[in-house]
Image (tube, rainbow, N blue to C red; front, side):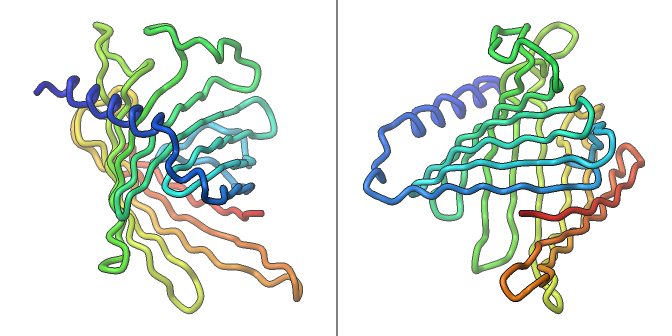
Length: 237
């Protein structure tokens, strides 16, 4: 089967699963509201061009094995990202379909999904969590639709593979990871296989009072492919 056909089958299967009536309707849905404030916005090893700190809110709804969510990033001038996602998990496996929109605070055309004209990037991600056997998570993500095309207009299926190992040391949660682009991608600016994201993230809750703790984190990031480095700090509400 050709590479393009594989991804089309994957997307169709995912849509069938997520559009099936929820068998978990009797379960109580959970709503999550969260806000991160970061010193700069770096994604998969690439600086996203925000002018200084960014505010990144999350609103999500989960019910059983299904979840839907909205995530955004806005700086204090004009940069804005708005993403929507729908996901399904079954044991160690998870499948997520994401809709990325990076066009900015004052950009129009959000509802335009016309092929070769849309500014939306649609990506499918497959994750595997080794759970109790090993604190390791693997995720493969591939762009399926949107401006991810070559000079001839064909979809490049830009992909990203990431491995994250989680542990703790003296009350500090640690995430160590590596992310890579497996083949040529104009979207990531890589002509071949490339490691774009080496990172170490430390997270701790600061006790500010008897009733309030503030989660803070610091992340050290290296992008060997682009020869760049970043140190990001942030906190969450």
